[in-house]
Structure formats: structure tokens, C-alpha cells
Image (cartoon, rainbow, N blue to C red; front, side):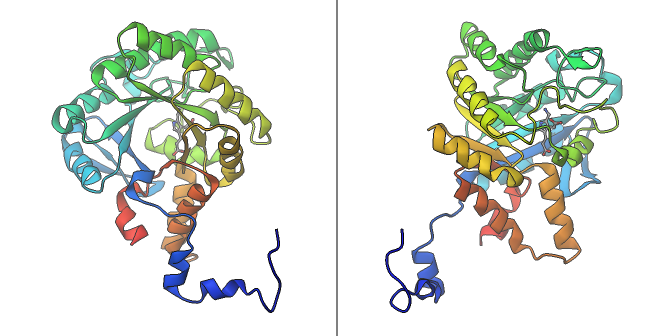
Length: 329
Ligand code: PBG
């Protein structure tokens, strides 16, 4: 579509002044576009730094309130909780996931008790923080068993819903789990608990720092290629999303983010469902390290986040979410 040519047409005219650039801007960010991930750790009075993720911390439950207060004040719609589980509580089956006194359960209750519905809570459904081998489900030899794993995941989902979790977010990539979880929640009276399916989750090398944050990096045996998606594929993402929508997902997630903007756009063009994207730990740490070493300046943060919006996301899970006011300005 060419509507004129030089010298009559000069696209630089609308770029000349700041007011004019603002006038024609096609995308922008507000606090409503962000979900803040929070790492939890057992104990008291700790705000623990994470070696591979500058400026991101693990919090004990008693230190959570100020973090949530700040998130509410900044009008973030939701936080996502991730636990660091001590080695002695991990086992082959990941049974700590179903302990109603576990870290995530306590955190949900604490936040809901104090802040009611001022902010949404989203929780990962997967066994990796709880298993001794770091995989998302039950192992048999070198494979994760699909249907056996779902039996545990549906209990984990129900437990989180009972504690007050608003959005159940299965990130395990087992086949058929959304349908089973939806039915199980409904049967138990949790028809209004939402499901955000990590429908398109790639077996990515960008998850490294996260695995450090939740303490699974040294435990993980092999890789997750037998259940997470192959990064050479894109059409397959449409099949994953179609299935999860049919099974009852309210929203879907594409993950990682920046190297997968083509997938976000593809999904958005094909389905009219809210699409979230996860700017994962590796993306975050690369940007932060580049900024610290003065290889790039900090405006790359805004640039990378806007690209998610351009690609069609409704919201972005980002470790930058709590520093938005500085980033958006
Ligand atoms: C685990 C899970 C992972 C992430 C979120 N949930 C890692 C994995 O699948 O190994 C990654 C998030 C990030 O890298 O920031 N189910």
C-alpha cells in the first residue's frame, strides 16, 4: 500500500517533533500491561539476592506485604508466585506440591487475607520446584509420565484455588491437563477460578537464571525437550493453543518472549483470546548485564517491552514490572 511518493510524501514529517510522534504512536504501555513475578523462600526476615538475576530477590512470607503494597500502589493487576523449595523437602514425586502448609499456600493466604481482591494472584502449576530431579512431572526412566502427572497437577490446582489463588497457570506442558483441571475445579465449586495456560512454552535456554532463583538448576537431569516445544516450530503453537482453548483456558501464555514475537503475533492473528507473554529470566538478565556493563543504555527496557505490545500481547510477565514508573516515565 503506497499512497504517494517523494517529494510529496515525507514520512519524516510526523517524526519531526515529540508532540507529533506522540500523536501518531500506535502502541504504549500502562501498569495494566504487567504481571510481577515474586520468588518466595522459607524462613524469617529475609530479602535474599539472586546471583544470576540482578535486582531480583527471594522474600520470606513476613517480608511480602511491602512488596504487594507497592505492586497495588503501582496499579499492577497481578503477581505470580514462585517458591524456592529447600532440598530436604524435595523428593522423586514432588509431594511437597500437595502440602497445604507449603510456601505457596502460605503466601496466597497471607496476601488474600491482607489485600483481598486489590490484586490478583497467579500460581504456577508444575512440579519442578518440588521434585528431586527438577522435572515438571513424575518420571519413569528418562521420560515424564503425562497422565500420571496430570493426576497430581489437578490436585495442586485445586489446592491453590482453595487457598485463594485467582489464576491457575499450568506451565508443565502435559497433554490434556487444561481440560482435566477445568473439570476438577468446576466439580469442586471453583467455577470462577481462571486458568491461564502456558499453552506455548518452548524448551528454552533462556530459563537458566530462573532455575537458579528457584533452586532447580543443579538438580535438573537432562533437558525438557520431551514435553516443552521445539524452538524450530511455529505451526505447532497454533495446535497447542487451539487445544487449550477447547479445553477451557481463559487466557494463554507464550514463553519466552522476545525471541518468540513471531509466535505471539501468529497466535494473536489466529485466536481472539487474551495472549500473555513471559519476558523470561534469561532475557531479563541479559538486558540487565548489558546495562550494568554500559554496553546498552537502559532505554532498551522500554523498547523490548513495547515490542511485546506491538506483537499483540495483553500483558507481560516481567521482572521489570516493579520498576515501571522509572521505565515508562
Ligand atoms: C517451571 C517454570 C519455568 C519458568 C517458569 N515456570 C522454568 C522451566 O520450565 O524450566 C521460567 C521463567 C523464567 O525463566 O523467567 N515450570
